Amino acid sequence: SSSLKAAFTMPQTKEALPLVSVGMPTYDRPHYLARALDSLVSQTYPNLEIIVSEDCAPNPETKRVIEEFTNRDSRVHYYHQERKLGAVANHFFVFQCTHGEYFIWVSDDDEWEEEFIEKGIESLLQHPDYDAWMCTITNTDSFGRVIRRYPGFSRFTSTNNRVADLVKYLREPEILGKSHVFHSLFRKSALEAIVSEYFPTEAWGSDM
Image (tube, rainbow, N blue to C red; front, side, top):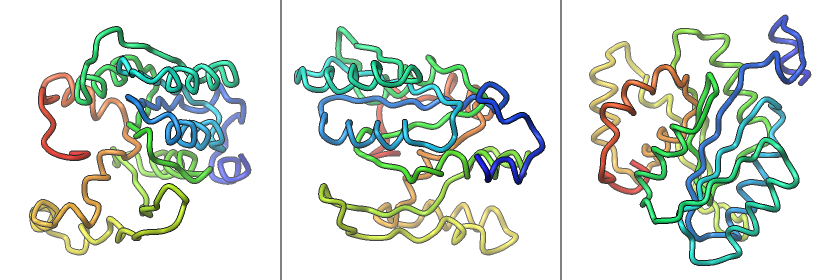
């Protein structure tokens, strides 16, 4: 894209850019799923693999939606689970299936601005000491009407005391959107050891 060209002197073919792996566990929300996948294949960043793991969904419409996108875009890869894994194991499954240098978990009821991944990769390439990138979030209803806008994550880095910032983050109520850091764009190398050793068998709560 023009933004990437301006920021970096690298060949602008798809293969020359770092591969970003997108892991999407899904169960039975075909309407939201179609909107989510549409916003992913519309990303301005081209070098993506999108791993969709459908967790033995009872509604055949879920499978139809995914197959529509696999037929339309070769970057979308579809896995059907014969037996229900559950949300936590399905998140682990999509992580294991990916090959990219960068990784992001996405929910099947979320949508992303077209430059979301491009902006994240730009930031991580410019800051090699950062392991994750996230933006501000808007909560909308099924009609796209804004319900709330979450405050930016910079509120957790207001001091030079990282321990104080971490305590502030942990004490904050989830309604302010702190769980959405789970959906950051990560360097996969920073996640691998943690996910392999500590990935929980039970969810802590919500997106956390």
